[in-house]
Image (tube, rainbow over all chains, first blue to last red; front, side, top):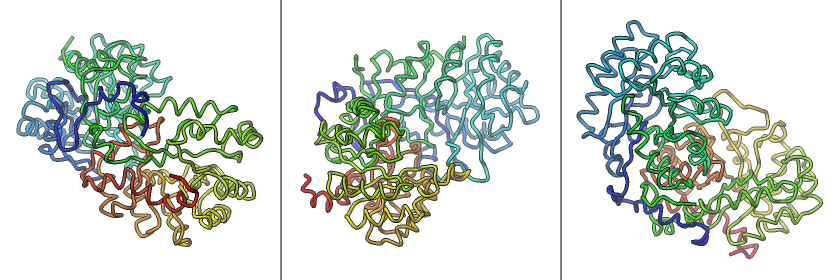
Length: 283
Length: 290
């Protein structure tokens, strides 16, 4: 066994749950900015029933989770997708699930889906899947959508990828979103709030994205034992939100990565909840 | 370094982790590249110690280069000239590190010499067959099979890098689980580990399912939910071996796959340590290792 010294005070940090025992919920506040409901199109996931996912949120002491819908990847009746999402969040969420509607600007009358997200479903933001919906960020429709969402006070979550390309279904191979046009576009839209989901950031990409106010990140695929710490310290304060990509990815993975990093208390609290609380508020 | 005083859920407590008695079969500091004087490797191990301690790991297996074509020529030359560079990390962390040497199937004679030196007569417990550019380095090639025969004759374990990439192999020397299964069928007395379970594990698990002398290793891909559950269902809990891929992957990603899986605590104990211990037990006993 390695020495206690080698662990530093990590043991004190990681007073996590014993198996079968829920952690003390008063000891932290966690907002998971990146979960999805319903069925992943290519595999059964252990927590793809909303009731199961909510049970896990409770068990892990996660106060709030921002939920998109896996149905949005391939379904074309996006209005129906969003309605089911909102109902499921109301029925099962017990206040923990915040619905994040999807908009596909390649569909006719997408502005109506955007309007409903704001006025009917009252979602705080929308989630985009440019690579599954078939447009690049330099397509003018993306800027129109981002501008439209910002004007009505919605944030935008942009899923840079949903699955490692190496493991995708052979008939549905979807490249990661090319983010290079993003800094220039977002600079033209004052007040825009965008969060990149599921990004495994490369250094050169990060340098470019970090310069632009309004671009935020999650940590669902930020691997390397020091990866989250490096990401947070490469960014201006407030730009990295906790997000797990559950139930496609194991939620505990992002939580443990948070703990194994060398974050100080302020950084940890910012990551786990405070940055999300600021991000969700319209400017 | 300041540490957060708040607790973060997700990781079992120390007593539970100690109960798992974790042995890591796939520890990859600097991808075992020692650099010209051995310092790359030791620095990367030092970087990982805090994480290993958080996970309460007992042992971790690295894959030393031994002067073949598996690292850059300058480092390979240094390793040949100064064999102490190969063992530098083991000398420093004798109770932590285990080793399996990396072989180069384009250099059969040199690899067999290395097997004799480091596995038959030295402290290593097996070999690591990496993904590599040349066709000879695919596990089905006759060169790779000759090396496998030699390792098997000495009772060593073969950790074979495998991936099923949707778009196909990136280079001819990569091996798939299907190819490993075909090799393992020829050598029923061999002990094979299918590193990364093929990455795309739904196919990887199926590919090795019939090969009772193949275990799957758990690291090297995102913490995709359902992997361990499927592996236990299709292979049984005694054919799954934990690997961390630290520090380039993370405790969260790799340990999370097992501890969050919907399997029994007994299965977790097997996967996180006991299966690997049992696989290594004969050769460790023969070498008089604890």
